[in-house]
Length: 426
Image (cartoon, rainbow, N blue to C red; front, side, top):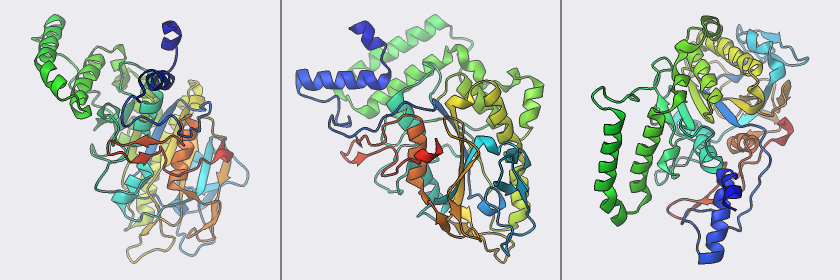
């Protein structure tokens, strides 16, 4: 029986232990464990990993993936044909236009959050920001519910952006917090032992620390206290991992690095590919600067250059390595920009309608889902909420989107709140 149990994945083992504890002892594993009667929508996953590209600031949809050539304030941006009949992108995205057959363009996104901080929080968690609780992001949910693929590397990594950005572990165990890398070029800092400490002494020091902490842990067996031990355990695994080379971009051939481009974002995309190749399940990278209240067209032209080149390179690279089928590539942003040009030649916040993109991971490419009106101001067909979008990602990963999980305070939550997946995209 134990051999069979060891062959189960983490979620299945947890359920087995939960049922056994309930039957034999009359108790659950913990106060935050999912109740046995909870509805669970589970399917065979179409994706194993996620590369989530977050365009911080609010991408202008009508200047990128949803051009409106007849709109008076479209400006100098012309639409171009893609390699899929009937689908047009902005001329700022020529390389992605040639790969539209790999993309599912969701043109009918809308949000109820029109400011950056709450909009970003909502996009990452599916919940409205509240001071009393922090909600988990999708990377934390994935690693909590489905487990890691590589036992020594973190299962959740964030490249760029803020170290305190939303979408962390939230009320889940702190071991699901994303490892933050400030720069894709610097590798992983602080993973080498000091030159004066060999492996034997390192083990002795750890054993001494554990012995000194034992009485404290026995007296205060709280989750927050145990989290410190988890951090030490994960750090030691990482220090000894043979896969640390995944963080070293210099190991890539120059030709590959050149295809991704020399921008910070391009290097982040390349690092993301290396990480999922080594078993990191959720990688988020940020391309900021999309808050184009001033000089919208000049700024979008600059921002789309690395986006177009590097995401195109990422899609091709994943495809040729056989990773695209199991890796869901997400392009998300907190809201769109107003179709109207303001007095500073810019576009203002516009949560009423915007665009997000999915590729790989079981998504059927070459399609547009939903639409906006002639100006890009309002949703015309098949509106998609932020929780719906996140539920679609969770659905691709095979996560139980109807499963209820309780926070330490006893409040019930689900992966994407009340969002329902867009199954037509698969």
